[in-house]
Length: 414
Image (cartoon, rainbow, N blue to C red):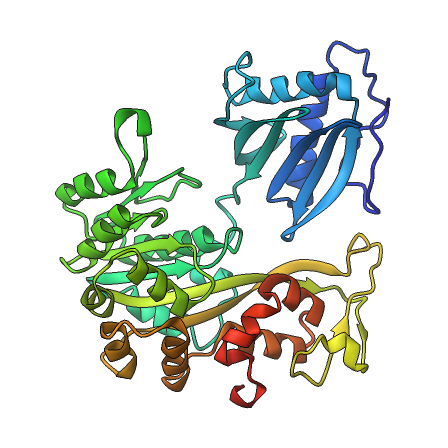
């Protein structure tokens, strides 16, 4: 069985490989890693199935089928990947994680394996190269977000949280903030981090990685870092109450704290932290800003105008462009992605008082909008009107039900 490409755009050249060749698995893994890098994929999925080992690339946030390899050789391919990641090849009944770097692909990659019905599944996460999105100006932040964020990074205490779902670029934004501080201050501030894992090395920052077997988790590492005389601390992600408490306490004791958090909106970030048991006064006094972001695919030049109501998908927009697909975009209709960001600042206003009274997420968002916050839905509507993306892409990323709960979904507030 020869691996067959299963998408319009050839994302990897696996033709001409002989499954009977002893070096077949080695060559397949080398080529798929190189192809994933060349295609700009964020993740490579190797999914075992009855028909064979399916290879898919996640490009611009969407999975694309690439090839299917012979089922009887699937264990060899996964084993080769585990060898590169220095994992235990004989251990196939439990999850494992490791890192890999190859000469053909000069970026850090994380390999995660997991046992399934048809064999081990593997996912390779490709971290962005250190030369990409280094500065805040590289991210494409909105004009009403970039200057205030830059000013907040000059503060000596408080927390800046970057929230959003998985794959929304939170860590990239946090790293850009860290690089901004490192370069602007030229080593005059003590910058440290505790991460799980370290994705990219940042010059001028003392970066540390959690080590659970040694008892070093995020919360424990953060408490020990406080004794290292830091001024700026990056916590890779706030996942639980102990980490949240330690991180936000640091923001109240003369440290500038950067971290990421999983939440659907800026207001929801506050709600979830309150649900974790964080005291309201800590959020109002300790948090400088919450950036909630999404990544939307950008329409290719082949997109066409559409004036029918169906193309709007119920969104309050007038001008709509929809994807067509061409050779340049691999038939997807999209090329690249851009950021949507809403920025909430819980200052000593009505919003701050609402946080102290533990108001619900909807009310917090209403007050934030009254204070000048532009929501993710408003950003999305503006992006559609500008022809940057399509209603279908907005619905794919933001969904349908969320709009009914968001004040930003009301066109009268745009």
